[in-house]
Image (tube, rainbow, N blue to C red; front, side):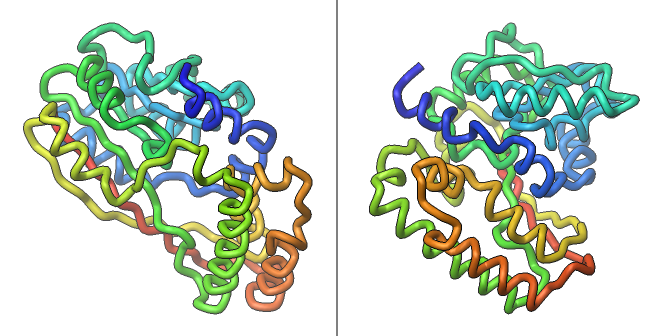
Length: 271
């Protein structure tokens, strides 16, 4: 495993429970769209690469004969397995250690391969090759992400963005943003097209509605690997703007849940 991949894996250690508690569940319509494009109602195999705590893997329970989450971080994988145990219909969902360029799966085995909130941590070229290798002809690859922050209150969103500026400044000063291997999300679609491995490429926009309050907005901030990395280095919540965000969120949002609108961009290719 290359040094930058090792660093990317390590940055997600130590906060899997926070990640799973506060991150959004991808909307079920993504399942409908991808199965439609793959030409199957019930895929034989869906592979979720960079599956984390399984938020994007578990949604396939009952919608595919087999679902495999590929996740290199043991903390994230352990949390996913714990969450699986609480679901009555997740016997077809399993998790394996692996990375996007070496899944260990056989050629042409998958109907659908997904990367939810994870493709920007993967080296695109070799990942496309591995995806094309494990996809059957006519299978679908989808890398999808939601916009941050979700739409809920312009004042709360601005407080979140102000915090993000603060922690990004500390990331720059610490050199973390330069050592992490990260690729721009807005280049995903062009990368899929330019790989030459997919016969049809497009972007689809969808959204979902969840609920949130002040606690969840702070939890979302704490669920980011960059924030966790700064806290691991000994910086305080005051220094990186979490305390200020917490105070603003409590004042603006309070404890009562309200609707939050998550916008997703799905960049996909049909092999």
